[in-house]
Amino acid sequence: MKKHLLIIILSVSALLAAKELTLQEKLELRRERQAQAEQYEKDGKYRKAAKIYKKLAFAEDDFQQTAQWKLRQGECLLLAGKVQKSLEVYQDLLESNQLVIPYSLILEKLRQIADCFEQGEGTFLGLKDRSAAIKVYRLAIRETPSVHVTLQDRLKLAELLLADGEPEDAANTYLQAIKQAPNNPTLRLKLAQLLLKLSQDKNGDSDGSRLRGAAREAKAFLRLAPPEDAVGRQEAADILVAVQNGEAERLLMQAKFYLRPRSFRPEAAKRYLNQIFTEHADSPAAEEARRLQRDVLPGEKVPEKRPPSLDAPRKNVPELEKSLTPVGE
Image (cartoon, one colour):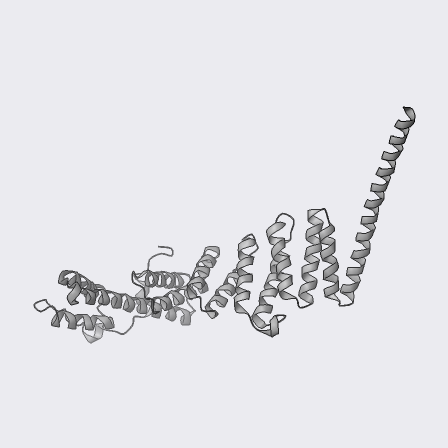
């Protein structure tokens, strides 16, 4: 019995010794691979270094160390011009190791990758891929804590979206940027310009929300911009005049709708025409509104056009500022 017990004890000891030896071998193997990868990096053989860092990450049990190996792998792939593969590594890091990764470092690498896609560096046949750059910035903003995302990141995304023909997404990006920096006048003016443009596109602005948004942001700019910014302030004033004219045009279209034979409702048309006369008497649409009331609604009094001295084509900035509401209203 004692003999059998002794054999069991010796066997267990041998197994434990073998296990310890295996762990030692793993540590030695890791040191060898690390040294080899670092040498490849020094020699500029980044693809080979990336392959070894991938093996090290796969064999690692510690989450934090795994993240470090993947960071080195991603950087080597980027240096080797393997932009897409590098992006995949950083994306995996963001989605699976959120507690142990340096967000600021990864964000900087993602900016570099987005720039590569935009410039056609390291891409298939050297083709520029703006859509891929947009995806990278969206990934960065979505997966990175907002404290690490800069205002320039959002502005760059908005710029790419505009260039890629996605103005509505660009407007939403400006809105998010304004939440981050509500007192930045440049953001306000950019959004005002974009909303005015969107109100004039082929899809129209049936409820006037884009025009109202453009006016709101232009007024905010005038409140926030320094007095010496004469160019910006005049641009904002021009936007407000364009908004007034656009709103008048929208009301005119509503009035015309109710003067059609199939939808003829003269009282509704009169309401829209009177609103033009009351609120937008100096607009180009007001003249056509007078003609409509005179020709289509006989018997109705047609308001006279204002005297030339009061019928200026556009107001200057001080005049517009008199009726401005506070920022955010």
